[in-house]
Image 1 (tube, one colour):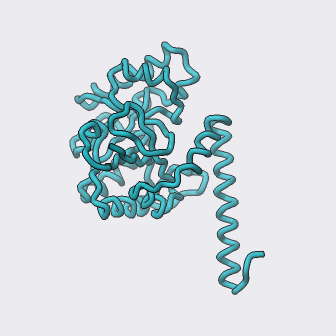
Image 2 (tube, helix red, strand yellow):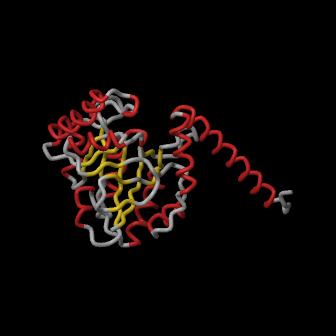
Image 3 (cartoon, one colour):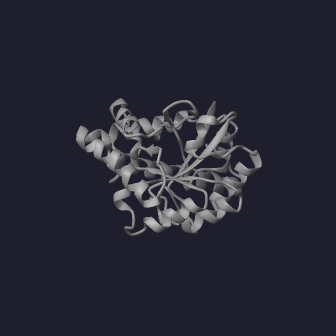
Length: 262
């Protein structure tokens, strides 16, 4: 059975500059959640995917930003929706990141937590011993923080290969999430996700929910990110968004003046 996983990062009360691509205004989140409720799709936690008998959805938040609990939990709760938060355990309690008590409160509301490794490093660049520590120790630390089993892992930057997946399964995880855009199979150990940004339109979310997502452009960008590195990719993407906004603004201006673009 197939499912879709939406990948958010942090939430804001208003729109942010374009350079902060991953900040999603809470008003945008509300629209997305209302679309989900309107589709009447089963919204599951990772541990429940194995028994899904129809197309379903997972809502995920990476990095354990405090804004998810402060702004997102209420929006999820009042719609009867649940989500999973992927936590880099070495950053818990640092500025802007949820504390252990925040995570326990999140779980008490019916949501789940998963590992996002310990230090949010690119696992492909680490030694086998370092990879084991990032994957295994974060699981143990997170389980101690929240007092419940942790069975899912989201790979930072989506930087994943067979060696990393094998280490995750040996550590006791039942599901590994990457950032590779696409639908997942409930019976598979590795699943992709759809990245949701502040600029993501409601129509794009609708296509994902209707199982007709146009994810080839996302895959191109993800492949580019892997090839040139995260920092260069973010600079390129900011430039791309800026150019797109300039073109859209020019088109809107010329339409309002009764002109056509030549």
